[in-house]
Image (tube, rainbow, N blue to C red; front, top):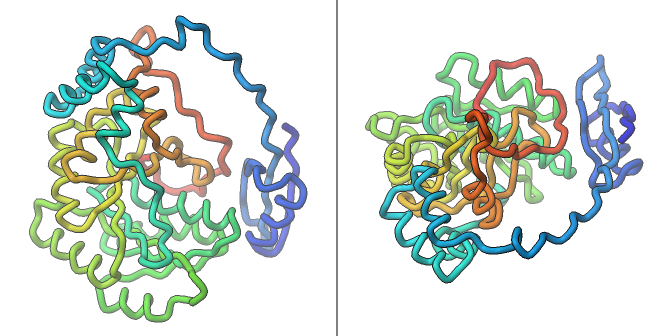
Amino acid sequence: MRPKQFQAASMAEAMALVRAEFGADAIILSCERRGDLVELAAAAEPEIEDPAPPSPSAAGRPSAEAVALALRRHNLPAALAAPLAARCAALPLEAGLADSFAFMPLPDGIGRPLLLAGPHGAGKTLSCAKLATRMVLSGVSPLVISADGMRAGGPEQLAAFTRLLGLDLAVVRHRTMLASVLAQRPGGGTPVLIDAAGCDPADPEQAAALRSLVATAGASVLLVLPAGLDPDEAAELGTAFAALGATHLLPTRLDAARRLGGVLAAAAAGGLALTEAGIGPGAAHGLLRLSPAVLAERLLAMPAQGGAGVAPLAPRPAFAAPSVEEQPR
């Protein structure tokens, strides 16, 4: 995989050069602005040989007892673990997860804006930057709105990414400003991403502010939660944010979390669809589509010797993030 440099006046033009050279599956290795130019380092997707088919012993389905042990290891609440383990007496874990949870693509933000909500420090801003980056790399320029103006440095963190992407960032501090920005949104199916302020749903004032923001935008709400939370706390957050309009869940730091009981507890308690997960600090290729197969593999993976965690979920190489404060992934 030999990288090549591309320079152009805009991100869209630079990406067009990359796609012309390497095709749609090019890997973006770095991205930075040099004066009036955007410079990308990119390479072709390496060819990976298909793995050999598993041996009969490796292909065997884990027993119901092994599944139950794995679910306990991940601290899955008993009310979820027991019926799931019972299903797995006759079904693979992957099929049991598909029967027990909803798995859906993320809303596209076109018909209705996509609003990212969650507790303070969950990783909403970086997740919003990842979604915006993916759209730009696919040739779509979203309208990105920061409603996080009350937190010191909140809009500046997102602005560091949008500048690099050649996007304008709209910063709103109340619902009237949001309504005005949305009224002026470009036509032609422009997706809208809204980075909401961190919210403690147990605080009536913060909950009311988020509810007002959602109503003004008419938005689909994506709950962003760190993976690895205590399952009871995650379930309470899932329920509380569902009451504020959340319908989908994006867990962050999935690559670093050793136990996923909190992710499943939040989804079950809030009736939230599992969508994608944050798996790295880079803004490009830092999201992983969640599926029953991905979760089953992660749940059944045994911790490494010495407590070093389980096999990593390695994202594809990502462009270097701007120098902003470290955030959850």
